[in-house]
Image (cartoon, rainbow, N blue to C red; front, side, top):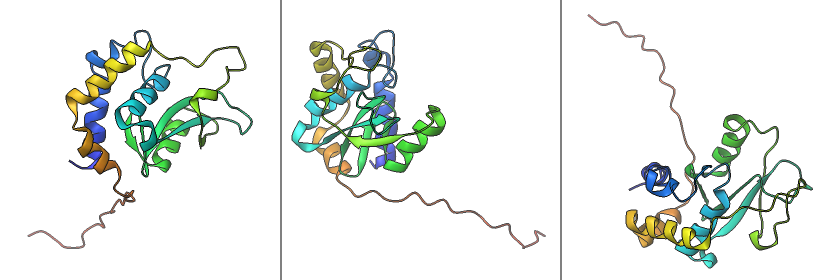
Length: 166
């Protein structure tokens, strides 16, 4: 299994009915991201990874999105991505005007300026999500895979052929 395969499989597991049933009324990128971050922290061990957030302004401390980093890789509800992929997705797919990606401590995250508290599902449901990860993936294999260095994505543009078919 390579990073692309794992990312695809992870996304399929996370967006399955089994996992989505733990976060009714929202998804992993619109309310469930912190709970998924906590599940990854339990599954990998909090010493194995770092927690990150996306904010729109440097003086903003309440996350627009929360996720984890293991090695060079970021994990969230969309699977596995590198820094540029994560930034691109939130700028162009999610439509953010600005994206600042930085490490943060979820234990000290303040409420949003509108008073909204950081949202987490019940701890028992987060543990259930960890069980779902265990059911579908071999923890040690995934950990080793994510320790591999980030390889740049290279797209090869095929030049038009100047040969004539006979």
